[in-house]
Length: 412
Image (tube, rainbow, N blue to C red):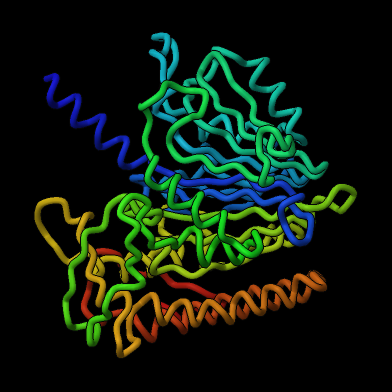
């Protein structure tokens, strides 16, 4: 029984690994703070949702199998307050019998509905100490220029102010699955932390594009210092080339990414912009959206049923081909030829080129986010994403079947 329990705990730690950063507006070229979460989870089907029920309206990432959106895993509300988390494995004291574990998603939904600032979030943690079954690093920003991490157990927290030069001299902090205030030599994610810290230190600018193109898809191993992007490329997608795939930022269990680009102090908080990747980051494209028009999200990244959005399903279908080993720990062996090759038919090569067009159009709309221009961008995005994946999806049936998508339903 002890061995079984140990194995179960080990699997849980694999599934709940995440990488994140809180970036002050002082460290970005346009003065807007950034919040980043690269989500690793056993719930591989994620969606972006707009919620307008009780309290503040918000946009966030939820599990597809949670149609009521009871748990939110990262998001931003109409006041410009944004929150995300990473599980922490070195601040996990035994919970009282009255508390259920892993309530971070419930807490973050509650925070998005009730908090308008980092101070509000701290008051929530202080006033509900001992009431939530949580062990996490919560990252938060607001429309007043505040930015912080709260390393939080069920009955305590330690705040790290990202605007404090003594705490964050570079204007940002990074967290994976350990807390700085936790026990030494415990926790997880140290290799991913080192890889991300090195990348950030060498960045020319900290922008949403840098995070989604370079940080969340960082293929340099933090311990081995080997970069998968620098390996000798296979001839084409059929020259199977298996590589060990473990402890990179992207993992088999990577399900979604969100970068929240906040607003400058005094700017309309509804000008917050979201940069989501709904699906496995190496086979899904970024699809930026605008909070001001979030009540009509692109169809390819949202759903009101338990059927995965088109982007999520298509990315998972391509991902099936990246991990061909059908035995042992298949998640640890990636076919690099399907990702990049000399013929330039790898999924990563094709999708990153196609993603450039999305980012270009999104930035054009950002200059003048008129509601009609945003709606037209969303209509174009739905059809563009459908066309891109229809052209490259393998013909043979795989595990993940595709739903309809787009206003015309061209993808079936």
